[in-house]
Image (cartoon, rainbow, N blue to C red; front, side):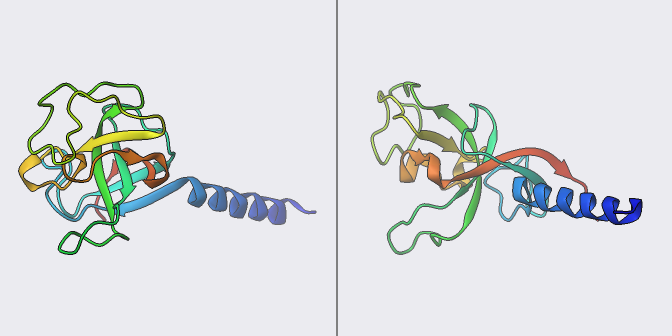
Length: 143
């Protein structure tokens, strides 16, 4: 194989691997303000094991009618991971009564930074690892 062909194959393979591991997404909404504003673009690394304090991209859980669509992706901050105990009164409203409970294995608890505008674990409870797509690694400048 000559050099240019080999370089082309390596570049194509690199792009394929990068696309499988990274997602570029645009923020839509104000639930993560002031850190993330509507229209901001972020790069997300695929992982199902976010750490506390990181902003995670997750698949919205199926909810009763009137709630956002089950196929939607959300950006929320991870505030507790498996084994953490949520203090009583950890958040209002606590629709599922998570206060005082330990986060079960394979789950996380997420909140929007802008609580009044956020639909998060206060409303839909623990987030199973299967719903976590990845974590934000950096902002991407607008074109």
